[in-house]
Structure formats: structure tokens, C-alpha cells
Image 1 (cartoon, rainbow, N blue to C red):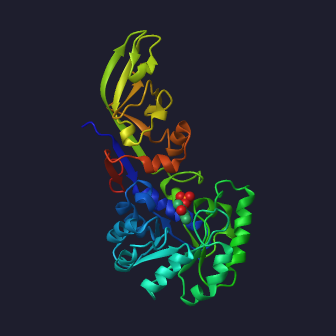
Image 2: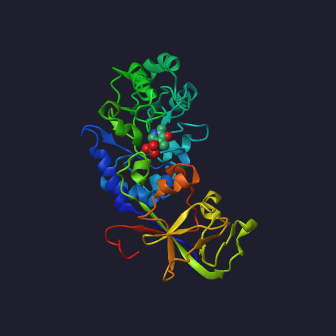
Image 3: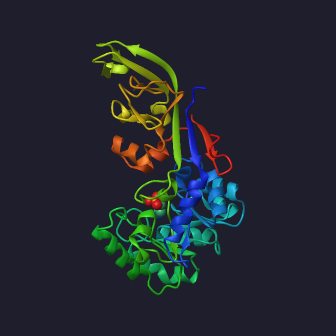
Length: 353
Ligand SMILES: *Cc1c(COP(=O)(O)O)cnc(C)c1O
């Protein structure tokens, strides 16, 4: 079999959720952000594991994502839609019992007119300038909206991954100014905000990336492993080239392994001549260009050629890979392709995969 194996540790996701939950006061509820197919890891399996761990409220980006989550969870858990209530969403919001986080006066009007009495939340902009009502808009509609009993009033921090950034305190102050005394559950913190401390927790936190083992929470349990099968081994003589555009020239005789995965699997061309694969604890440098389906690796120093080499695993996590590519762990995760054989590991199956 020449497809790479992506192993997703559902127990690690559940353990990360519990650990993030313990970081806030017991009266603060911990939700789970599962947008973009649970950061690329498969919403269906991930939300079931999180629900078993105790999560009762889930956030998706758009209503369509909510459909998959509702199907996996059945009735009961609350599914919040961060993009709010868009034209065309009404039937889905109603039929799947989604809770839109309304972002504008237009969305508030649409929601209250089309689905009176249906649960909703409000998203406020406290300085990120991306989504949500700004202070003057909120002031104009707050009384009317609060009469309708929103489930949640939330906002989002722009720089929570930088604890010393002055915008954190500024957004916190703005959130207080906009919401103190409203008597509605409030939420400001994603993963980074949880780490900023109790002042940022309010009644609900919304971790995403921390569940999946990414920064800024450095002590998250790693969740993903990616093993690429070795298809072929060849000896390359001094002066010979490897791969497209002669991306690598051997200065001395080398042993090159060709492994099955490439940029079509979300492994960016930036890994060309830059990333490292691992045979257990032994690093093997990528040589030459990453192509669509294949990567070439220098294995000259290995005594035995393994069946697979690890791109993600104990020696190299999503953020290590992100650093090599000049991006963030979020993008490494959500880029993971659809061609992998996906294995979901739990306590029962760990060790067999
Ligand atoms: C993505 C997102 C989250 C989760 O953020 P993480 O940094 O992954 O924890 C929370 N709230 C909103 C509004 C988001 O867009």
C-alpha cells in the first residue's frame, strides 16, 4: 500500500480538552471549536470523542459544518455557528437546531424575523475588526436583543498568543465596557485566552487548536502522527541530481528513499530541501523538490531501510513542521490531505496502529 497513514489520537484530544477545562474555574464551561472539519482531523470522530469527554457546546465556522456535527452528535449538544445567520441558512439553522452567533444588525434582523424564539448568540467586535458588532451598533440594539434572551455574548482576541501584547488588555476592557451587567453568559477566550488567566475566562471558553496539540499551549498532548511509506530506494552517484528542476545534486554517493506523499497531500513545497523525516529518532533530510505525490529523502546513514518514515510523530510535531514552512500549526493541520489512510487511535487500539 502506497498511501501514507495519518494517525489521530482521540484520547489525546479528549485529554487536552479535560486539561484545558481544568485551567478555568469549575463554573466556567469549556466548549470545543471544531470548525474546518475539526482542524482537518475529522469532525465526526472528534466531536464524539469530545462529547464523551464532557463537551456540551461546539463551535463551527459555517452552518454547513454544523450539519455534519449534528449528525455525529444527535440532538442535545449546542452547536454554535461563528459566521452567524446568513441568507439561505434559515432552514438549516432551524432543522438542525444550530445556534448562530449573530454578527451584524442585518443578521439580528434576519434571525429574529425568520426564526423568532430560536436560540442565538451575539458576537461583538472588541478591536480585532473581523467579525461582530462594534460598540455603537451594539449600543443601539442591545436592549432589544437582550429582551430576546441570547444564549451567549462573545468576542475574539486578536493577539492572545502573545501574552504581553497590549491589545489583550484593551480588548478585555472593551468587552467589559460593552457587556458588564447584561446578565448573559459571556465568552472571550480561545486557547490563547485561556492561558492569559482567569480574567479572560468569563462563563465559557472556546479552545480549538489546543485540543489538537498546537501552540500556543506548549504542554498539549500531541494528537497526530504521519508515516510515509518508502516506495523505492536508489543509489545516486556523486554529481547526479534528484527530482524536478535538479533541486538537489549529490556531492558524494548517496542513498535516496522515495516516499509516497507530496503537495497534493498538503505537504507544502516549502519542505523541499528543508524538512526532515524521521526513522524513529534518526533524522533523514528531505532532498530536492517536494512533488505532487512523492518526496525524496537522504537515508545514506541508515543501517536498515524502514518501511515508513515519519513526518509527524514524537520527534517532530505540527508546530515544528510549521516553523520549517514559515506558517502556523493551524495551517499544517487544516492542510492535511484526503488521500491518507486515517486511523483513529484510542486506548483500546493504541499500539496496534
Ligand atoms: C477559531 C476560533 C476559535 C478557536 O481558536 P484557537 O486559537 O484555535 O483556540 C475560537 N473563537 C473563534 C471566534 C474562532 O474563530
